[in-house]
Image 1 (tube, helix red, strand yellow):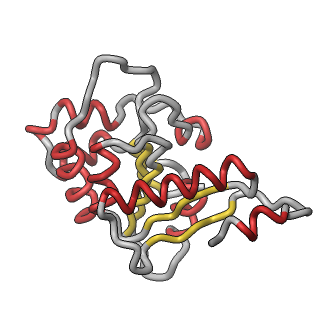
Image 2 (cartoon, rainbow, N blue to C red):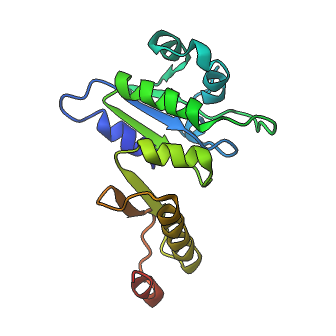
Length: 176
């Protein structure tokens, strides 16, 4: 979903540059989806945050043939590395100055880093499927956002990723 959204942003009139960042530390799929084998990832950037500037970040980003600039997640699971929200804030603030749009696949983790990503986001898309477990989890995520103090003033949209021909009655009842 993030890659398709970012790719469509590249087609907008007046848009010069679009980046997509895969924050899913364990199961990042953007490199796989784009058929790329990047040399670097955002953990590499975070570990070298003292060097972070536009030149360094540009050297790390992978430029895909679709005109997307990609900052992927690690190709291997990194068990012992914890990134601080302050480092993610630094990376994202720099990316916001370099690109017209920055699309982030935040994965399914709700932690301090996720809070920082939410804080810096202009728009959040919650992606779900119309099934009872997914709708229950969507409600849990919304409740968690409320506890985080994340504002719901029009900057959060819900996207149904798969269309089911027969929409179960519980989907409509679950909206309230």
